[in-house]
Image 1 (cartoon, rainbow, N blue to C red):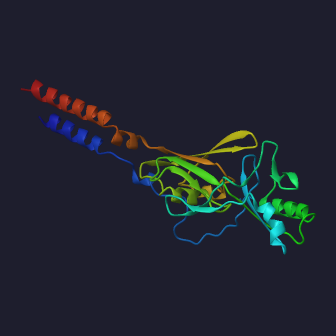
Image 2 (tube, rainbow, N blue to C red):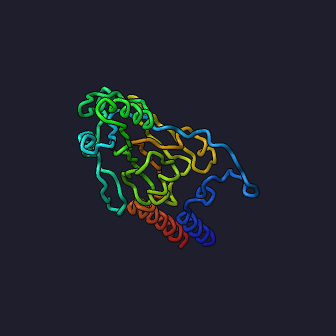
Image 3 (cartoon, rainbow, N blue to C red):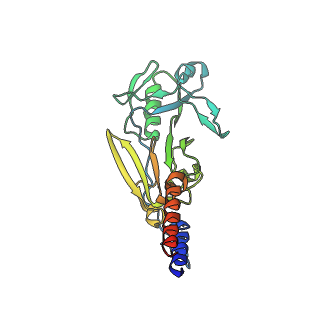
Amino acid sequence: MKKTIYLFITVLFLSSCGVKYKYVPYFTDLPRDSEIKEKITNQTTFKVQVHDVLAITVSSPSPEAAAMFNVGTTSSVQNENNTNVLTAMNGFAVDEKGDIQIPLVGAVKIVGLSLAEVRLLIQEKLTTYLKNPVVNIRLANFKISILGDVAKPGVYPINNQRVNIAEALSLAGDLNITARRQDVLLVREIDGERKYIRFDMQSKDVFNSPYYYLQNNDVLYIQPDKVAYSNVDNSYRNVGIILSVISILSIFLSRL
């Protein structure tokens, strides 16, 4: 009879097992009793890629003359979260050759350039048609995708050219308690190649990673712990409970 009770207690204990706390916090290797300073050396400069869409605004002392160069500017709308984002429907799209097509100017190769370099290049080319042109540029279709074990998976538009992995996870409502913080996967397509990079969000080394700052069209996948699966799979859980009950009843009946 005692063995039956012990077995029953063991089954209850195992069924209540969940995610251990030590796997939940972030950056656990940071010392807790001191102030730490380090230089930021991994900031990256955004480079234009094929299929990017640029919002280009041109101004000059003659607004009428500058108007024809603004046909590709984007407009501001609100998404479902009431956040202003730029639509990319009317932007200047970078074609397969790495060019954008500007009225009168024609094809301008900008792939691989920073936005500052693109601005200076276009400004120089417009001096043929405008007096003292001023060019403003921003990436209109900057977005990242976040899926897996997060509170709000989805595709998120970014209103500027800088976002890091911590900010991205915050946009998605943070990792769920069952997410594997040691196994956050970044998928990046650049220069015709696809890269797979893994992060350990429990380590402070993530801050110094060359991939800490995300780029356009990056995808983050957060793998769930096995506990997450067992919690949502009722059939799996119920089968385990039923088998445990049958085992207990079998032992109990065998001793009658």
